[in-house]
Length: 198
Ligand SMILES: O=C(O)CCC(=O)C(=O)O
Ligand SMILES: [Fe+2]
Image 1 (cartoon, rainbow, N blue to C red):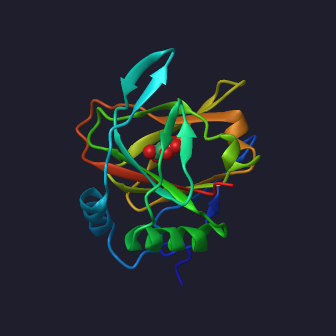
Image 2: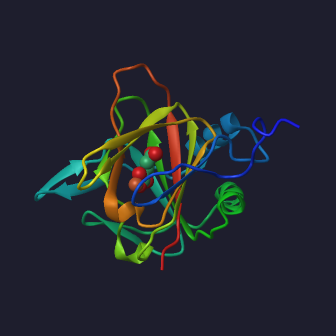
């Protein structure tokens, strides 16, 4: 048996001050391309603005928030939409792969290389002391950058189509992460971060 080609177990990725796990392909009952197309189509995408240093900016991406609780960050409150059957299917697969439970998901749609997400930590109080996040990506590969808050070192992870990145432990206390813009011609990418809101 080839132990590597069809692994469905989360592979630990050693990192200081936190936990990371990696699965190259989350097992799903439909293809990655089908998931991407349906998410583009079925999601009530919005382009929110956030306030940074008192100034309002449109976010360079589209997003949507599904779950049973509202989500607040950067002066913005996202009212939740209910989980759809497709989101529930992906959540179920992410729960099996990570052994954790999630009650909400933030979707981000990077239409092309000009869309991005600034460096941040997902450390809102409602995520608990040690937030657990299952980050599932579809479509174009983009580089996920982690930067240590005090050490300054960075780790770059290409998040490929169908992959799952698990973040846990004290990672959010010690690291920032984000998605840089790229001048390379890249297609659409949708990322889903499944979270547990308390
Ligand atoms: O698009 C990504 O891979 C990152 C998304 C993210 O950091 C977030 O939703 O908080
Ligand atoms: Fe994040």
